[in-house]
Length: 132
Image (cartoon, rainbow, N blue to C red; front, top):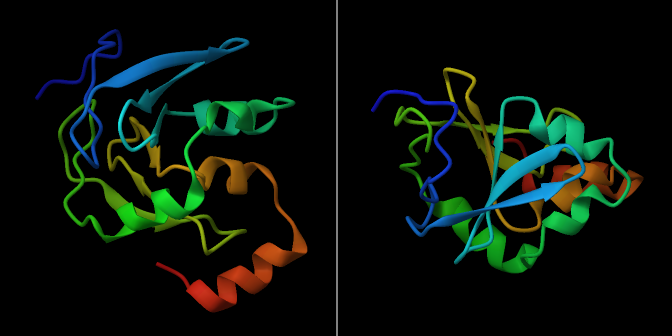
C-alpha cells in the first residue's frame, strides 16, 4: 500500500471499521465508528494534547478501549506496515501503536484522555500495568 497523506478514507487498524474525520480547531483526526479508537497523523496527538478540551474528541470508554490492547496484528492505516507497540514514556500504563515510518499513532478509546491529563496517579497506574 502506498502512503497518500491526502487520503481521507481509512479503516480502523484495530477493528477494521470505517473512521470518521473529526476536527478541533486546526487539528483533524480520525475516530473509529465502532471501537472509538483514534488515529493521529504525525504530530497531531501532541498538538491536540496542548489544546484546551482537546480530549473531548475521545468519546469512547476507557474500559472498552482496554479490551483492544490484546490485538497483536495492527497495520498502519496510511502505509500498511505493521505498527510497533509502544507506551508513553511519562505514563507507561498508556499503550498505543506507532507507525514505523512515522505516519502516525493509534490510541484505543480513552487513552488520549488519559494521555492528555498527566497526574501523580499515572505513576501508580504504570506500576500496576507495567511497560509494554
